[in-house]
Length: 504
Image 1 (tube, rainbow, N blue to C red):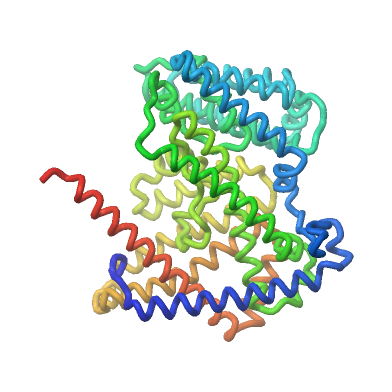
Image 2 (cartoon, rainbow, N blue to C red; image 1 turned 135 degrees about the vertical axis):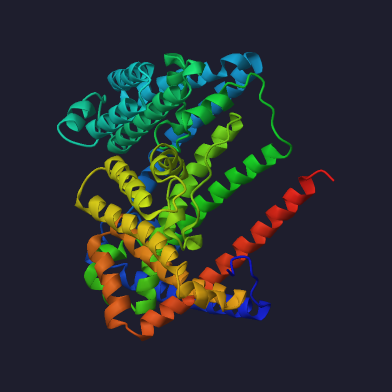
């Protein structure tokens, strides 16, 4: 009840006012903390000179972000630009060969970046999965995929395979893990789709064209083989009306986001402050809550920028790639929480939905979520912090279903039925606010550190109780209701559009 119910405009206006004021107040405290800590000895390694002409330093604690947009910026632009130019040329001259062009260009880029022996290593994995697909046994294909993934995550095989990379450079480990991990997922998808559709007789060439598509190769997102093959096999692809405008808009948004992050890091040291727990412990409760929240928002922005750039190139190639992840601000249920929509779709199709079915029964859902997070743990690289992250998020996902099942039983079902739809939405909003902070805390463990997560939890739940706890939950409740209103509006617009498409 209450999901599609509108709240009074005055009430929503009050929520907007409260949320805006709270964010401004917390942001001010975080800005002052960043200015006060700029000269600390503990900040010297990760707060470097930035805009010298106004005396601002910059937070450079994120190694990957700095590498992408400094020393490797020109290489990335040159490589992707070359892909776009050659793809356009091939589409004009021989569109039936464009998939081969993508694969050849991607393989050459891999050789130029990682060396020929690394390419041969990946070709070996591709051939192994292709042979397994010929046997037509899904369990064998999935088992081989997990074994291959483990070989890139666990010693001594990871060290041995890392030796196939030619030379050493700053992003070697990142590119090795990205290229290898995504190769395994793509090969597994190919093998499972071959088993599911034996009549289609996919070839090794189809797998190579799928795996060595350069924009997706190192960083994803991953498209399942059936979707990629269907789209890339179109001999004469046609753009929808207005598609080029949307591609340009996406590219512009990615550039704007990069500039916004650069400006933000000159004023807010959100990645460096958590590393100095002594300094972080002196922050006001509101600033500490904003710091925890902003760490997850930044990780989402980082993923959105990466996938935005890659997806822009993919759309120019007439592909429909997975969308960027849903903004963390709009997440208040674990079932929709993910930071990579492509991997989420892969896991849902081959593991989660396959085992869990409709996700309405407790035991199948528990088995499906445990299996899914086991694969995710292997994907991220088994270690203590990943084990803890998987355990917490697996619990959160199942706990949601348990609460839902409990709410469907008496007397809770009768109590909710006696409420108005607006009051039901408000009650659900309270639980959504609690869930929102559970999502933040459970993911902060892996995105930052266990020690910082403990500090935030202790301040918000123990030493700050009840004033800080209730204040943070009320502000979050306001945000959840505004997100629900946005979702309600979008759902109504979609229904209206569908009604217009129905024949009279």
